[in-house]
Length: 613
Image (cartoon, rainbow, N blue to C red; front, top):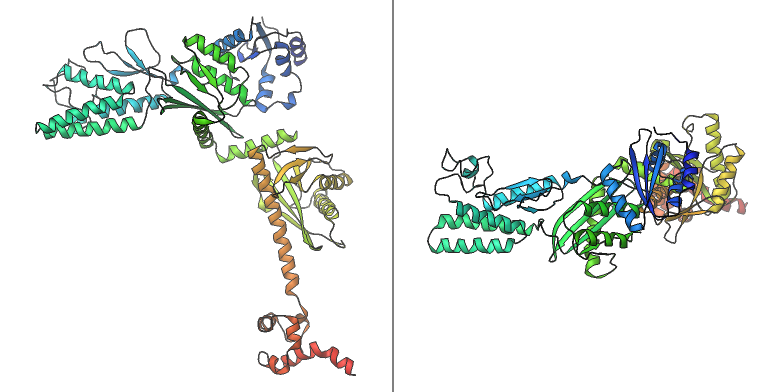
C-alpha cells in the first residue's frame, strides 16, 4: 500500500537523498509514473521541485501538485543513469516528460526480393525475416507518399490483385487506362520484367535514382532505335518520373546518411524539434515534433535527442546540435556503444556544418510558428511577461505617457491591452491642469491620481482594475506613479519602460531601481515595444490636436465680420498676421467687402490712432 506524502514530507525525503548520480521517478496518488528524470546529484535536483514552487512554470507547478510520492535509483555513474532514464521513459511514457511519437509514427518500407513477385509494404518495425527494410520515415503520411511516388514512377501495381494467381484473369483495372500501371495482370507480362522493375524500386529506396534513371534512358533510346515509339514514349514518361522523384531527395532509408542536423526553436507557446538528414551533401529527409514550450530548452533537447535515436535502427556518424547540452559527451558514448560505430555530436559555430544547422533551425522555426495561432501567442506572451516580472500573467495592462512641447499643451495618454491585444474603447486621454511649465513627474503624478480617483469612485469607464501599470520613463517615473497610488491607498504592479539609444524599450524597471532586461526575449521585447509605441502615438495625437486648435485661434477671431472662411482667405493671401496688419485699405477691399475691410484695417491701426490723440 502506497503512503500519501505531504509537500513538507516530500521536501524532507528529498533532503535525505545522496549526492550521487541516479534517476528519480515521480508518481501520483494512483501510483502512476508521471515524470522520470536524471540527476548528477539526486539530492540537489529532486529538492528543487519542492522549494520555491512559485518560480516554476505553470506546467512544472501542475506536475509538482500531482506528485504523491517518488522513488530514486542510484546509479554507478552518470552514464549508467542516462541509460536507465531512457529505458524508464520508453517503458512508462510519463505524462509530464516531453515525448516523441511512438514507433508507430515512424514506419518502414519492407521489400523481400526472395519472393517470386515481391511487393513493397509499410510496416511498423523491423523483423529478422530476411527482407530488406527502408526507413524509418518522418511519418506515416510521408511514407505513404514515398510509396505512391515510386509506384507511379515505375508503373507498379496499385490494386489488390495477387500475382501470379491473377495474371491473365479478368480485365485490366482503371489504373492501366489512366497510365498509372503497366498492366502487370495482362498475358505476356513476365515475372522477369516484374522483378527487373521491382529491382529498380529497390534501387530508388536505396537512393540510387541516378542509376535507375540511366537504365531507363538506355532502354528508351533502344526502343526508339527499334522504331518502337509507343514503348519509347512510355519509357520517356518513366524516366521523367524517376528524375522528378530523385529531385525531391526523399529518404534513402536502410542505411544512415552521413550527417544529421538538429534544429530547435521555441516561441512563447510552441516548440519544435527538427532533424534534417543529409547524405552525400543532399537533403534526404526531415522529421519534426511540435509540442508546448518547455521551461528548460537544454533539458528538452537532450531528452528529445535520446528518444529520437534510441527508437531507430541506425545513426549517422555526425550529429549537429544547435546549442550545448549538459550530457552531450554521455549521449555520444551511448550512441557509439548502441550502434557499434563512432558517433560524433558537435555544436558547430562556422563553416558548412553551421550552414546546415542554420537550415535545420529555420525549419524548426517555420513549423513552430505554423502551429501557433494568434490567441495562443497572446496568452503565451503575457504568461512569459508575468513570469519575468514575478507577478501573475497580466490580463489587463495600462500604459501611460506624457506629451508636450516646451511646456505647452501638456497631455497624457492611457492605453489598455487586454489579454495581449489593444482595447481601444478603454483608452483615455488627459489634459494636464494647473502646471507652470514642463514637469514630467508632476504631470505623471496628476494623471495617475486622476485615473485612480475615478477608479475608487466607480466612475464609468474607470471601474476596471489593471493587472500591471507600465510608465513611459525610468525609475523616477515609476516612483512617482507608486507615490500617487499610495496616496489613494491602492497598490498595483508598476514598472517603468527604460529605452535604448534607438528609443526602444530595452528593460522594465521597478521603483527600487531593479532592471529586468527584455531585449533578450524577442516575444516580450516586441510586445512591450508595441505597447510603448501605441501609448506614445495616442499621446502625441492628442497633443497635436490641442496645439492645432490653439494655433488656429488668432487675433482675427476678435474682428467683427471675420469668420472662419474670411480668416482663411486673409491668411492665404497675406500669409501672416503681420502682413495683414501692414495691408492698405485698398488691398483689403480687393478681398473683403468695404465695411469688413474697414473693421480689419481699424483693428490693426487703432494703436496708431491712440498715439496721435
